[in-house]
Picture (cartoon, rainbow, N blue to C red):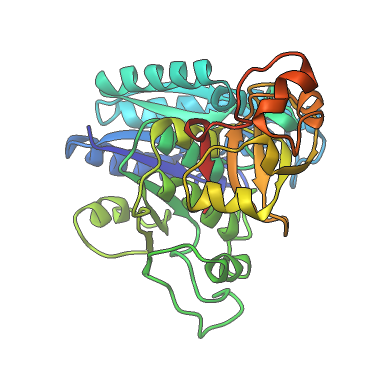
Length: 365
């Protein structure tokens, strides 16, 4: 099944007067054409808050969280109804799917969300996914829908994630300020230089500028997903790209795709704390493919329980891995630096020799 995730930002869908129904209709036509060409399509769409803000007669960005959630509740129905009408003209069915961060953090919910989406795709239904802003709180939020789209692409094992932007792609500098800025057609590896470049070259609309799109691409490519950033305001451009015509910026997938479970650990779960390792443990994990033992842990930060995700940090504070711990922070504080043979004596019990087993650990690039 060749799956394409299309992320549509609020700057593409809305005007000062609310939802741009003409643009939604054009996008529905482009996405329907992809569906007719044999692709299974998933839409991650912003725009609910903007639509609700207009119905409430509010000008400018909403800062009050309760008002923002109320606007999302009002606008979400209008947004989905606009998609329902537009896709219906092309004989396509849509389904509303609202997600919060815990749908990815909990393994059971993660798999349930995946099964639901795959069932919809098998019935040729186009899921319209948005963050559930009405009930989301800070610890359950994605931050922006670029991040959500990357997680959805990994969830459904998509081949391509297309991020529709209000600029043509990633530029070497902000094209609105520098007329010599050039578009970068292909990125094989997202380096710190690329990330720094994106900080000065982004969109000024919505919650996520170009930098958030690069961060999302960094997540998606690790899962073997090709990411394309193109101009979402050009009708027909989406289909043109899939017909082999170059446009925007393409990010190639990582050479080694993360296994499904390790991909979930790497990107799906929030970290609850950090383990500070010595050089020997860092080398054992990164080059030897070993598990993390108590003897390699120098200190811990944060409070976490057994089974929670934590980052593993080098002596210089660099993130080198993320994994699921076999001991909570209180237990771990009593055994750091010890040999595995001493765990039983220190705690009075032993869950495992390993603090994090290598099967429950993902290396951070």
